[in-house]
Length: 239
Ligand SMILES: O=C(CO)[C@@H](O)[C@H](O)COP(=O)(O)O
Image (cartoon, rainbow, N blue to C red; front, side, top):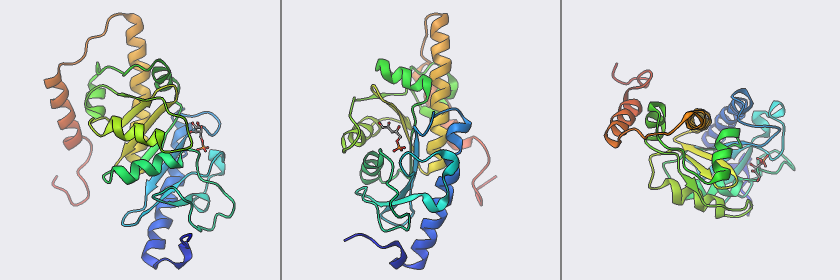
């Protein structure tokens, strides 16, 4: 039976509303950072404390996205009765749902076809960790996942099988493009931005000549520093 959003407890409805607002706003970052053309990208976020997530409606232009049009799905990827009428969720809903079911630590998923990361995906080649910003954000190379056709669990399975053993929050799905994950949607969007920047810069470097990876020990040191000390302490955290 289809879940009725209006029948859920008020605290759940409030959590869904806040998530819808965040996800709608984050979609503006995709064209802002030139990660998409037309509508070729999507963002989702798990609704904390529930078995629901919020995702972009398929094919809707980014400047038309509103919190009220964000589609609410269960963890099987089925749309709930969420008040969006006939709006269908993203083409990649099954992939996002699979990640949420199999990686409980993941709170946000993003998919784009950003040019340079997608070019590396077309070649099926991992982006080598030759930059300190890659060590910071990805903890090593950006891996390649298997070729899989949209529409069932195969893309999601490829994302999980590739990222489960990796520190990277980004995977280049072969012949398709990047998918990124994070503890929330904003972190996954950041990973998508940084993935495209790494893809572009490493491509330019490789045109200039041979590349050498940063030694593993230095990658570990850079990664742990960045993940623990970059930016400002969390609210209420130690200064
Ligand atoms: O890559 C694909 C389809 O293969 C999708 O990512 C679309 O490019 C965006 O689809 P919607 O999220 O608008 O359904």
